[in-house]
Image (tube, rainbow, N blue to C red; front, top):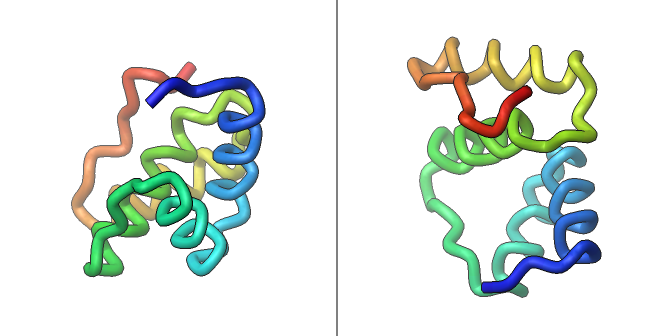
Length: 80
């Protein structure tokens, strides 16, 4: 899948919304897999938040804390 600027802008906004229905609809529209398990779903969302350049430090801190609380690694190779 080739990602253009409008896709990335929409993806980032959808992920940062933390709206499960909106995220699921976005993923289904683009043929992206959505986990059935809520912990896996939110783990993927919060790892995505860490990779979003426009995410605030507060959003990233919340994502890190959630991941740690659920025994997941908060590090992201994309995180600056």
